[in-house]
Amino acid sequence: MNTVALGLLIPFAGTTLGTAMVFLLKKEISHNLKKLLLGFASGIMIAAVMWSLLTPSMEMAENQGIVFSWLPAAIGFAIGIAFLLLLDSVIPHIHSDEPEGMQANLKKSTMIVFAMTLHNIPEGMAVGVVLAGMMEGVSNITSASALALAIGIAVQNIPEGAIVSTPLRLAGNSRKKAFFGGMLAGIIEPIAAIITILLIRITLPALPYILAFAAGSMMYVVVEELLPDLQSGKHSNIGIIGLALGFIMMMIMDSVMG
Image (cartoon, rainbow, N blue to C red; front, top):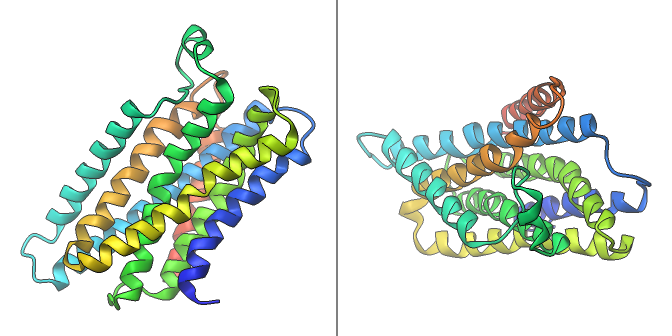
């Protein structure tokens, strides 16, 4: 199986493995474990934003002869944030800080799937843009670095899948329905990746902007969807420990495989 196929399938496999945990867990994930897993996922995504997306964006802009090599990265990053802000406003989903009355007006299980779908779009785009750069022979994007990003996202998809499928089960769905609900939301990742690859092959000169766009989108997810949960409930440093572990793991993977 070639690198592109692996890059598309590995993150989805991570989501599927995580959602399958619903068949093993007999009760809701503990608060501290959830914080640890969310922190771990946040750390991986932040490291991926820096080394797998923004750094290649600036290096490619420099290779293209752009005087201010940071400019495409800055513009793309800002547009990525704005795009996710728009999606966040348009797609209905549950925020952890919303009052119960607002949540009660929506079907909870559907909103959970919407939230995970929104979360997975930028991750799919990030994988797609790196795979497209590799396919086009961009010097600073190798097959190893593309696989490193795919594996890193797959690893952080495992706890996220478990965190999503468990409340689907507790909302009254069967284990099988909770599993397929989480997996359905996860399939948006390879779809977003494929669409991104097709678009980039048409507009290759815009790749530095698109790399940064994916970075901005992922950073929005971290700040809006993940970090607030690390501060919820009783104070604990467990989420910060998880974030540090995830960041270090992704940093090492990108260094070794990139």
